[in-house]
Image (tube, rainbow, N blue to C red; front, side, top):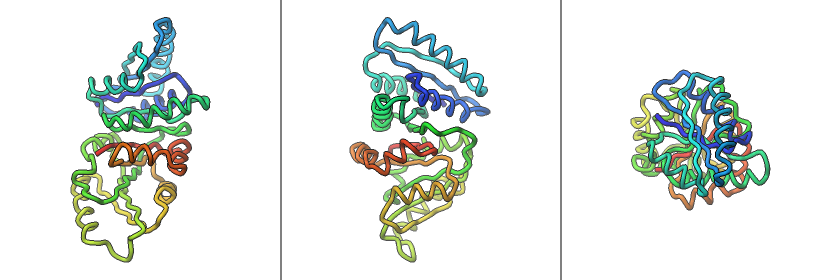
Length: 260
């Protein structure tokens, strides 16, 4: 699998690269591409020097095949999308903030824009995240037409890197004592879909979805959270809400965003 890690050489971007290297250490048949876009030809030498330094630092963190690419282009997102499609990337790993407030706007918004492009799953690495191991992964689902709404193939490609315990969680204020026939049917489909990971299911009846998910992540020692936005415009709105922005910018748990 090809994993692309774009970087602007900020602390947060470099942390995402470090997370990716440690995440891939000990795995096989994976290639990590460090990618940088600069918009002035005069910056080429500095960009390549910074990239060589970053590659050297990353190689000292773990035994991973690493390639680098620096490109002159004024459109970062289009360039990254083109690269991901060219290599049929299985994953893009990105930080969510930069080292200044200006970079928080630039790098954070670019991360969410890349998710919206729906090229491949994007792993959003919070600035405080340090990779140790991925033992518990939570997948959020609304349990509606999971056969078509859950992109299980790309999700499983990422899960296979870790072989974690999989926790599938649904938050809905209408949950009562027992599940409806629809929920039972969808649960059965998810069992088949992720059978090799022996999924456990949680149905939580509350109104505050984001806060409940945050609590679930803490209570179950979740190492990675998987979200499946249904529509790009809804996803953008979802990530602009105050609670979810706080999760994306401050959580120590990386978020894997994978479109249907």
